[in-house]
Amino acid sequence: MSHHICIEDDYLTFDGEVIPFGKRAIEKENTKVINEILDTIVHKIGKEEVSVCGTGDAKRMLGRKIEDRLKREVSYE
Image (cartoon, rainbow, N blue to C red; front, side, top):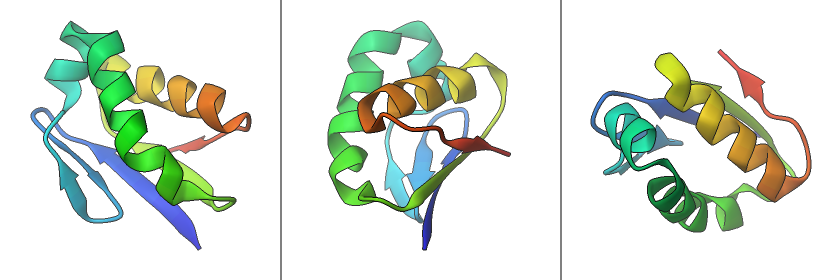
């Protein structure tokens, strides 16, 4: 199984679950918002692969923070 994170402008989805932070919030208030997102999803990931999709800098910003937290690479779509 793998996990899929898709970043939209005003929200993101994690395996279909809507999280109320999107590209705009990540790029504007990055550290605070990214930490909240990570606290919400990282404990659900386990050893499975993670794929991140979206546009703009938010995709790489969130992807890198997930990699730091998990201590392994994620893939990008």
